[in-house]
Length: 331
Length: 232
Ligand SMILES: Nc1ncnc2c1ncn2[C@@H]1O[C@H](COP(=O)(O)OP(=O)(O)O)[C@@H](O)[C@H]1O
Ligand SMILES: [Mg+2]
Figure 1 (cartoon, chains in turn cyan, purple):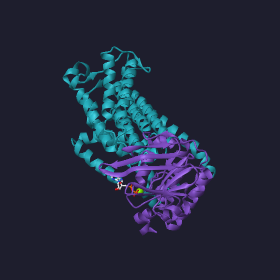
Figure 2 (cartoon, chains in turn green, brown):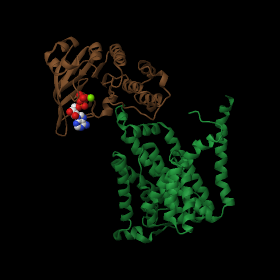
Figure 3 (cartoon, helix red, strand yellow):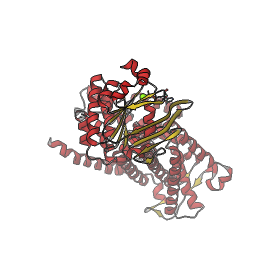
Figure 4 (tube, chains in turn cyan, red):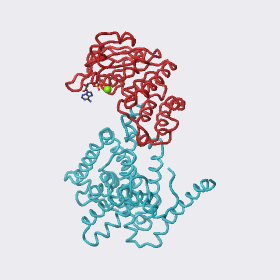
């Protein structure tokens, strides 16, 4: 039909409009408070994205996102404060160390089965978050007080005050979220993605088909940690501060919950999940019932939207039954 | 093509294969392996393809000792196998999985495989959704990709009717003859084996009992006593 040749450019135009409007509109119409929550939501969303990608493509659940997220921020602060690097070099150094760490850790753990993998990411994350609190390292890490991160000059053309401004930072976050979402989406659709999914499904048959099943998983693991590290660095640039809590287990579990809420099969779901989670936490916190209401929300989400918000909306089975959403997917 | 010497394999304290010697030539004939349940037939294929490390003995493939090589390496060198319990990618379409493997092994004649295994009508269905007998053919098709020199097939007829099994064996016989490759086929359906294999090996209790032409095997009184007596 003639319509299908038009549909691709139309989709592209729609996506471009969403991108531009999403970058600009909130800075005009939303207050600082809402923007702060949205920024936090997208940061969490990027972590959720990394967790979801590994789950969806490789069948591996990682519980160590926080150590990468908080760790990269901490390294950035240390690189500036103690190693006297310029902000840009400090970012590069922190990023590089995290990539090396993720590669070494990944090399050790992606070989194991999914349950062992989960436990090992948890153990490694907990080790890092406790090591940061060690008295002997206090001069470096700031212990329980955390570290103030202030820099002079500019990073990518922005001053410290720009990163701290919720409206300016929103634009940065929006672009970063899109880039990481698109990057992981592209990887998922590439040959590497196809190999990862096939390995997830039947690792042995892949080996018996001549594939190395180890390297693809290691690459995926490093890749998602790069996304988490970028989120961590953006977080400290915005907050001007690294707290030891940013390495804590609750950041890891929150990102997992956000991923499940949004839906793990794609890039929109986890990012949206992060934003929903951030606003919900604030709403629940205002009532002083954060934990309880979060728990209830998780149960409701998993029961009502087992494939997450995006997964649930995209199938729309119940809407179709009622006669809405006329166009049926043919695949 | 394949030379097995003094091969022994254990599962913990269970000795599944002891001291097996076997030579398989790349002469375009099907080499059948039969024997009672638990005789060690699957274990033999596992040791040859690298799924199980033998506790003793060697495996030579194309004049090279490959006893310590990885499964993936062996596959890339043209040693392919199918599984007794079907092992396909349930969640991928038939075409997706065949294509993925063909791309990796640099095989641009995927159509041949699809034709030989008669899968043209199922290409765009997920493997988990098609009938079991067709899944068996996908399993064998995955092994045929990349023009292997040595095929190891573990009960390709499992779950198929006697007529279907015979039909599959005839297909395999023709294919192996045409390509002049080596093929080891484990099968419990002795009629299909005797009808289509040029050579037959009998295993019993982890030991090599006899190897010969179907006529020789049928006439071997040890084989008849251990296995065929009841089955034929
Ligand atoms: N994974 C395993 N763990 C322990 N014992 C096994 C395992 N696989 C096979 N065996 C034992 O090894 C022997 C040979 O098994 P197998 O090679 O599967 O026989 P066949 O294929 O001829 O039926 C049997 O006694 C079986 O119980
Ligand atoms: Mg068997």
